[in-house]
Image (cartoon, rainbow, N blue to C red; front, side, top):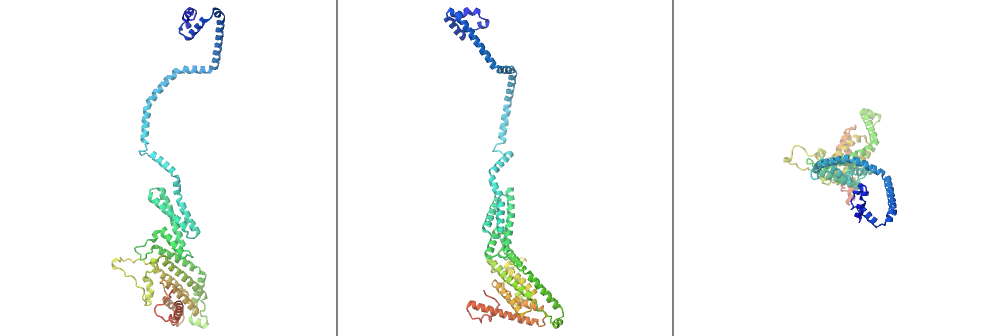
Length: 491
């Protein structure tokens, strides 16, 4: 029905409409609907319905064109340039296709060059930077080691005492840095830290050596200080194959420090020494005048009080310090306690016709013409004795009062007996001293008087020593002074 109706209406349609096929679904539906209407509906209602639908469609088209005007214009412009853009797009696509192999080659070359298994300087630098970043805390701790070591040393130096905790901490830090230096000897950072550590350890060694020069060093403090020096500076404790001593350089260092302390203590007597020097100048001026005129005018020398005060203080300090030095040395270095004296100490006794302690015989086969360095303990008492005797030779002639001189000589004999406990008795050398002092005086019979004076002093000293020994041992007091043999004061 719809096809027959379409053929009937086709001549009245325009060519665009007639060109449509009858198989158009919209046309077919509309024709089927027309076939169902009555004639009156076709003539009256259908034209009105078509007019309304046409007007509604026109309004919709106008509204759409009003809303989409800008988009339509833009689409039109883009569409006008599309014919130029498509060839360019095709050209760029062809060029991208040509560049893809080159990109693949570059990627392969990059992967080969910067592979982790192959060595590359840039990768090595990056690895080192990453490694440093991961170990930044450890590096900071290593860089703080010299500061910690210096703090431990400075704190112990500021306290003025041998703090075991600070020294132990310093030695632990030093051993740790030394171990790092052995493991990473090629590292400039470790080498720099090790150099700073060595400088700090030298400061610690200087501080320990300075502590040995303190005036109030006791045996325990001295042993601790020498023990720390053995650990801080082991090269000082290494024995010399040319030396007869077994205490290394520490023994010499200890004696030098304590001798410096002794000299510093004796230098505190400088005001008394100046007064004694003035008395010496006065005595020498009187002695330079004619002896007869001095005797006739009655201006004989009666001074010496200031010299006596100086010598008493000097001998007292010398006795305490010398005994303390040698006894402390023998306690700290017990391996050198039984070493024999050298020829330098034996010579004064040989001049008196006495026999000294026999020394060990030298093997001629091992003698190479160079004398071995003597032990520090074997020569140090001789140096102390010379120091005391030189002072007595210089100032004892000022003391002419018999009682004062006997008191001084007795004090010197006690000093000799004190050192005699440690193997350094020099009491027999005082006979030579008294003779030298008597030779310098202007008394006509001075030699005989000095000899008698020396004998009296020795007798009194022996009697007093015998009484003290008798009281200590419980025997009779008459046996001590009459015994023969060398003069010794037993402890």
